[in-house]
Length: 338
Image (cartoon, rainbow, N blue to C red; front, side, top):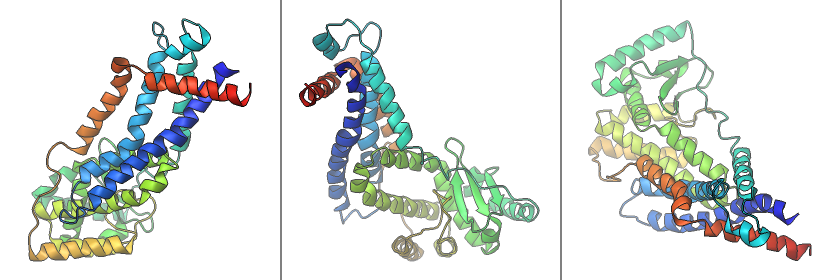
């Protein structure tokens, strides 16, 4: 019986103990970064994102890779040799499989609501023609040409969808309420989401919180703060690239309550976030903003490097932590059921 308990107890230990412990460390780092009052909420966006996502993704990647490494045909886990006097054992592979299934189960809700809205017909043709005219008049919006979809779904305002090739969805009724300047400024905001692949960025953060159910309570407030800062960052980038701050503020107010379907959206559900962004844009109307934060490698490139290191580390430096977890799980069961 002891030989079969490690995949279950091991996966439970990773999710219930290891991930919350890493979340606690990440929270400590986030608290220190957010105390940088001189830098403000827009500083350290990349580092804060790495702490929020890496605290879940990196430990999971390491343990999953370690389990696969020990399950390789010509590799023998120390715990198997020590406890079972066997040259090979399949428990590490089953542990990796169990951990993967647990992750899939916990993250099953992440993909809900991420699809784009239903394209509109009829009136949507006239709205799309107007949008194409606005795009043609503003060279800074050329990245959106061919990527704007009009929808007539009730209550839909403006949002960006698509992980590799993002597209911008805009509601017919919402577009009708905007002037050309407001529309161009709102599309300028969405251009920053498209350029930075923010739907994928947001998806990874939602995944990291979903697979860490206990750690999520430690990090959720910091994640909400990061979301607000990211949207404000896109506002600032849009203004730097030529969007008009006051029309953009008006557009944000019109899209103040996006639907649940809009994960990467112009509007804001929280009144405090809305007030902060409008205040920032009013300040930009008086004094043009400049880029002063998060220069250097992007969060995506840094995340990819760290993920590769986590996956390769067990193959290069050994899997002592997994061996300790393996023997500990079986000894614990022996102690409970001698």
